[in-house]
Image (tube, rainbow, N blue to C red; front, side):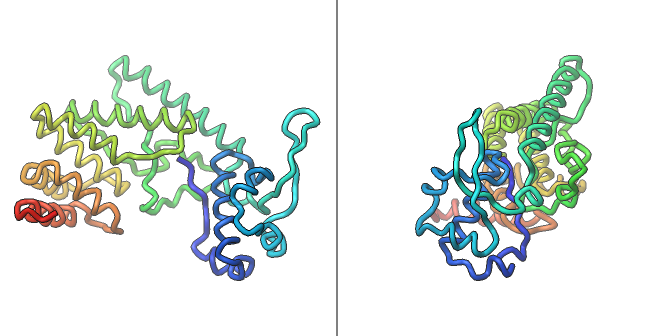
Length: 275
């Protein structure tokens, strides 16, 4: 999944603060459309008519955010529409996205080839957690798909958990290479966790949960945190994973301890029959 880059002062910018609610929403939706479809800021008229609610284009042009434009599609075929001004100054271009996808595809191929030879290699990183800070993503000349760009979680030593992580990474890698705009790490982890639990592999469940927490926090866990996750998983089972997901919505430095308290609350409510 791609991410639209918006400064946290965006809403207070002189060009933006005077926009109506519908014009503001149109601008954001157009940003998302262009980023998703890799149009480098061009909004075809047909797309504009679909997104627009009150014909807000003139307001965005007057504000200096849009301008009338056209794009040559094939040969002499010209499509009229609008262009988001300064789009490529803040958002990745079509060329850069395709280049990074090609590089990601090549890294994934090399990783698979080495895995066949039983080489130990860190798999391609999963999509970074948008709730966590990432200082490298704003550096234009740094490839943000390179493994060194993120403090990604260490692959579990437990064989079954390691295999689960590789399957998760493989699915996410395929999704990114094919341009699928979906990122649901939580669902993939839950599926693999259930497979381990159904096989009574508690050690695998603990290792996978620890990796998941590490991935969410974009850092390696301390031994005390891993021990906490082990206690939580043994005591509360599947509830532990649900607690981790709830804790992940908070901006926490110690997600494991908070998740343990959430799991205890969920367990008590379940035991008491609270829905």
